[in-house]
Length: 272
Length: 262
Image (cartoon, rainbow over all chains, first blue to last red; front, side, top):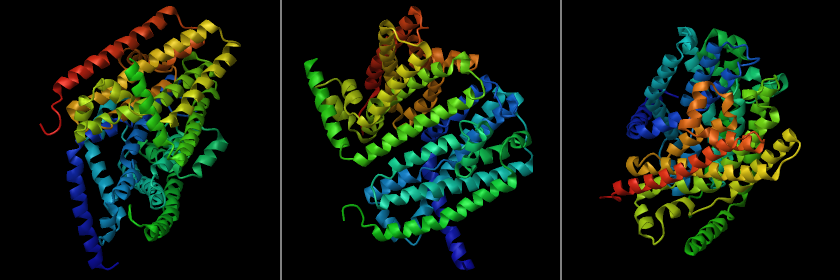
């Protein structure tokens, strides 16, 4: 890519981003509700802490930090591209997007990033509320860990986006790809670490989970953010975690491009 | 009354016919339901395999709670979700006006207009799990226990309906809160576990504010023969109060409704 095309891309993306941000900021109440609907890690924290977190190797404050971090990671890696894409495909909005000199998926990436920016104040509010209620859980992860954690969240978002876009591409063949998304959600829910840290799993099942992309979507970034004591009890090393994220990204990205190209070739606009 | 029954039959007949168009969807739903229950069992097992009894409940007793949750979740997908999540759309697009003009009660129409058979297997699976686990725990079931459980489960369904309806009705004021019911659904997932598995403050919250306890724990205790008459009466009282409130809330909301573009 030359400098010229890089700067064009950057300019396009920043315009897209600011448009999407203005749009998302309109729907603040809705985004607050989405943020609240991610309450599951807090429910699981309550159950695990009442059960004394058996066999996790985490004290009460570390357990609280783990689930809080899982909540935060989930907030910034939520992906809804398949819903939007399905609607755009059915309503016929996709056709003009395909004519524009910009890959339509970038539009959705920008929308997701804008939504994350709108979520930020709500998430900060919830996190401060949590530490006010449970001051004992507070621990500063350290600048290095924090930055690594943010990087991991970004990569996890990219991976989640790729996974869901693969399902979204199936819209080119079937009108109801969201039904398939439900099937993807289930292993995500149980293997990602949202409901239980991975060390709670028996060894065989944990190994199986670690060979799927799901634990790197929530548990790995969450352990980075939750600090040294939590990460020490978990199954990931920092290097291996990042390596797995990169490998999954490298495998899924070309797959998405292939599927997209095959899909566009097959696409005949609704009603045509 | 007869008119309402006839309307209901027509409503559900047409929804069934349109749903049968999507057979592959039904299959996917079935697989998703099985996998979801499997996942819930797995999480529960993560506790019990280490010898932790959640809130002092035995494995089989905890399965009864999960069964009650599964059954009510199926009820949500069958009736509540397809109807009540649409109130927002009616408000946004102005089609609520048409509903209000129909010579039939608007709350009835909005609550029961459509029906999604994909949730029915989940209801049956939940009931089956409840019965099987309770038998395994008790060795046998008394008819009066079953009768009492049926009453309490109906009360739980009524409470759940009222919660959903009240939340969905807030759309009249806020218009864009189409995902408010998602928050409710997420919060209610606490009903997968007996309330005594939660710390004391949450237990209080789940009994008095958000009646999760009356949705799954009380039915499970009744089926296990541990429920007292006072809990059964309390769950009936909660259900009737919730229904009355949902009705009053709908009346109130309609007074504030000014229809689209006015």
